[in-house]
Amino acid sequence: MKKRLSVTLCLRPPPFWLRWAGCGLLLFGAMGASGCGYALAGRGAFLPTDIRVVGIPPLVNRTTFFDVEQILTEKIRNEFIGRGKYRVVPEAAGADAVLNAEVTSITLSPVAFTTAQLASRYQFVLTMKVDFTDARTSKPLWENSALSFTGEYDLTSSAGNQIEAASFVDQQRSSFDRIATDVARTVVTAIVEAF
Image (cartoon, rainbow, N blue to C red; front, side, top):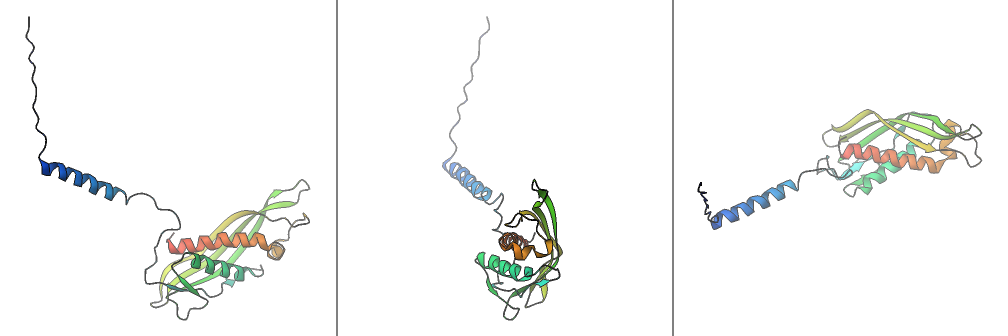
């Protein structure tokens, strides 16, 4: 018959300082890990912190669509103001940075139709040339010569007739207000967050 040998290891608890060092490392690791991960869109800050006043002169409209530049200028100004970090002025004088933009093209294409075969939903594509420059150094901070925005919108007239593409802004001001809000958010987010 074989004898079984049983061995019991006697481990002493770690010294006092080692337990505190372990807790400190664990706490330090948790604090470091909390800085990792994703940030919510709209929270980024790519622009230098010394830019507080943004000049936004009226946009230039190179299309045949009436009033587009006025609506977009107002919406972009409001979007910058809504960020809460910037004061917006309507000209370059006195500004830390200046946004210059021009609408280069707008296209509307029907994508959905009523039972009477009239267009009820349109795809809207707007292309802009945008540059955002430090007014003090004339250094470009952000630019895009072909910033494109695409969206689909219901644009039927109240009578249910097909809309003339060239006059949709006049007939559907509320629809274009929605479009302009989306375009302004896209432009300002691209500039502020350097997309």
